[in-house]
Each structure stands twice: as C-alpha cells, then as structure tokens.
Image (cartoon, rainbow over all chains, first blue to last red; front, top):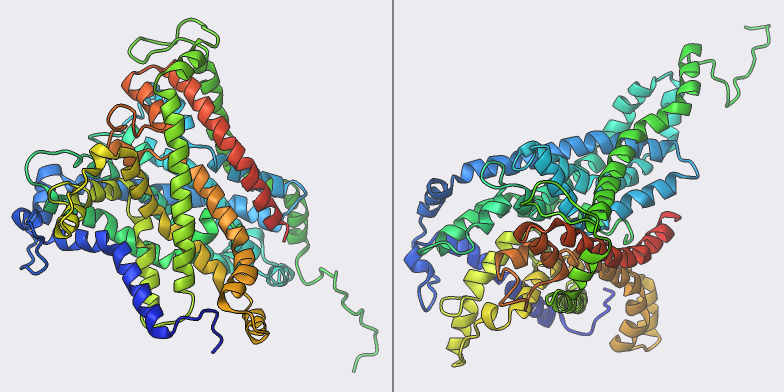
Length: 274
Length: 313
C-alpha cells in the first residue's frame, strides 16, 4: 500500500476523529439541545443524558409561525432554481455547442459579475425594490436570488454540456433529429447529472442566502435565514427553541450539501480546481 | 445482383436526413446561439449595469431615503464624508483583519485536515461528510449557534469548559468582538478549504510519491517538494475565492455584534449597510459601495486570470 505519511494507521484514525469531533461539536450540540427542555438546555454542568422531547418544535411554530418562513424559503429556493435553469440552460447549450472566439470572454464576464460584493448593489437594488413595490415580496426575492446564482449555474451547466461527446450529437443529426429533438433525446438524458447537481447547488445557495433576505424582506416574505436572525435577542429562555428552529432550518440543506460536494467544488471555485 | 454502380456514401453525405431539416439547421445555426444566449446575457447585463449606474449617480447627489427623491448634485462630498467618517478607517482595518485571519486559519487548518484524511482509515467516509457540514449551515444560524450556545459567558459551552479547567470564562462577544466574528466565519469556511484541498490531493501523483520514497526522501521532504507545489494552485484559488466572498461578510455581524461595541467589529460591508439602511443616507452609502467594488475588482482580476488559464485546457 502506497503511503505518503509516516504516522501509523491508529494514530491517524484517532487524530482524524478527534479533530473532526472537535470541529463538528457545535453542530452535534445543536442537535442535542433541540430535544431538551429549556431548563435542561441551560443546565450547568451541561446534561449529556436526558429524555428527549419534541415540545420545542411545536413551540417554535406557535411562537413565530415557522411554517410561513419555511414556505417562503421553499418558494424562493425552488423558484430561483427553476428560473435560473430556464435561463442558464439555453445559454450553456449555446456556448458548449456553438462555440465561437467570443465564448470564452462571455463566460469570463458572466463569472466576474458574481465576484462583485453584494453590498455594492445593496443601495440601488433596495431603492429599485422600494419604488417598484417589490420589497418584502417573494417575487422580488426570487428574482434577486436567481440573478445572484445565474453565473455559477451557467458555468456549471456549460461544464457538464461540454462533456457530452459531440459524436453522439453528430449521429443524432445524421438520423434527422430536429434541434428540439436533439435536446430532448440526447442532451437532456446525458446532461441530467449536471443539471441535477447545478439545481441542487442553486437550491443550497438560495436557501442559505442571508444578505438579501435580511435586507429586502421582513414579515411577509421573510425566509428562514431571516427568522433565525430574529432569535438574536429574544426574551426569556430560548436556547432549546433556537436549536429546534435552527435544526429544522438547516437539516435539509446540510443533507443536500452532502450529496452535492463534488459539484460544489466545481461551482464555487469556478472550475479552477479539478 | 446489382449492375448499376451505386454511389458510395461519403462522410459529408446528408442524404439520410431530409433536406428541410438540413436547411433548417443551416439557417438556425446563425441566429440560434445568440437567441439562446440572449436571456442570460441580457439579464446579467442589466443586473450589473443598472445598479452600477444608479450607484454612480447616487454617490454624487444628496439623497436620504427619509426625504423624497434625490436632490442636488454635490460632487465628491459623499466620498469625502464616507472617507472621513471616524468609522471608516477602523472598518477597513477590520475588513483586512477579518480577511487575513480567516484565510490564514482556513488554509492552514484546511491543509492539515486534508492531509490527515487523505489516506484511508476506518470511518473516513463519515469523517469527510461531517467535516463539510458547517459550510451548509445558514450564516444566521451559524452566528446564533456560536453567540448563544458556545460563546455565552455563563451557560455557553466554551465558558463551561474553561470553568472546568478553573479559568475565568471569556465574554467573547463583548470583549473580543472581531475575534469572535473571525471564529464564527472561519468555522463556516474551514470545510470549504478542506474540501478543495481534499479534492486536489486526490489527484496527487502516487507513483511519483512512491518513487521519491524509494529514493530515500523522508516524509517532510516528500511533503515539501511534491505535495506543497501540487497544493499551490488550490491554495491560490481558495485564497482568492475567500477574499471575494469574505469581503461581504454581513449576516454574522448583523446577528451577533451589530458592528460590535462602537465600531470594533464593523467591516466595510456593514458600514455601508449602516449608512444605507440605518442612517438612510443613500448618497454616502453609494460612495462607500463604489469603494468596496473597487477593492473587490482587484481580487477579481487575479482570479479571472487564473480561471482563464484553466478554461483553455
């Protein structure tokens, strides 16, 4: 077995697991606390063994209408993903299969729009949203999320479309396929993996999006990110509820993230790391 | 048996497809690519240009959101005001400190972790999955998790651990606001660096490593001469990506310190936010935004070059 290190297996295993548990500890603690009562949550010294309860999950819903915010998160995430795919897929198709000398520049330009800090656009977007009555609306948020994620989506779809062997396309053309037929029967099935992971990544990014959510929405269109922020300094004991609310808010996305690791590397580094 | 010579079909022969489809294709391939690209290019263009133009305009007028509509042209007064704001200098320093510290922590620890889990060991799959989890926690949940559950000076886990060792607990957010924010942001981004490095290490040339080992190179030498150069590019990418995204750290500050006691944990992004949505001074905020965009452009130029090289492969 080729080894590039000198530490024997046991040492590595122990150190790797120790480091991991230390780093992930806050999350594990969060999960535990979500199932405690408030009194158990602030117990000194902290309780490790206790009877779990589900009361926090119910209370969070009563107190802050969790479901509304969850619905908003869901709508804005799904909406921006679908809209993004609708706009990005044709563009990626065009750049992958009708490549010109300018294709590279166009792609680079698109990526560069993502590199500008969001705060640079905060003022105009806020003013625009205010004057067009889009503040605190799901539509406004969805549009902003879509535009934020569009460059990465185009990039990722382009990368996966490029991987489709051109010979298959040639073959389908020789068989007389129309353009739409080609898309439906060749591109779509072969590119489905790339499309799915692009969609997943966009979902993750939109769900976690906090900057625009905090600034452009409040009571009506607020997303989960904004709801969690409102727990910043409430009254009374709230740790268990905060943990429950956070757990519900982050669990689906953490799981999604596990499945989209590879695509994340591709997407977030703009492909600069293979 | 055929006696009439049949023409042999040549590769460019389209006789299998109908003529109309071929004609369709020929004309389509002229305008189709542009039409397909149009939605993406035009929306992104608007998304970029409209805010930019508006920001340029707002930065040279007096405009307060509490008063209707922009008023007079005041030249560079907003820029002057923003730059002479007593919070401006500290916010730039805080931004640089935040960027530098988080990048240093994530790159160093990320490399170490990636090396540690690079070789197989029991439970490696689970470890990898666990290690990347913090990155997917939404920033506001992350911030509050640390603010209340870890850093609370009485009930927080960190406080209880230090009490266990007989030390006085630190009141993180009050006494060390910027450091607290650095910890929170680093925790979030460490998995990112780690994941990138893990991916990169997978493509390390094993045979080269083995050959070096057989030639008598020890672990340190192998690391220095083989692994490190290989990691050079991913490190550069991570540094640049983090520079770009960390410049806009906002949610963590908003949810925890609100800029810190005074301006102790205010960065440039938060300062702009304060001007825009707390003082409602759109003019000054726009001036600040241009400054932030300028900073970001510098980092972006380098990143674009790096990506461009990769695109040509």
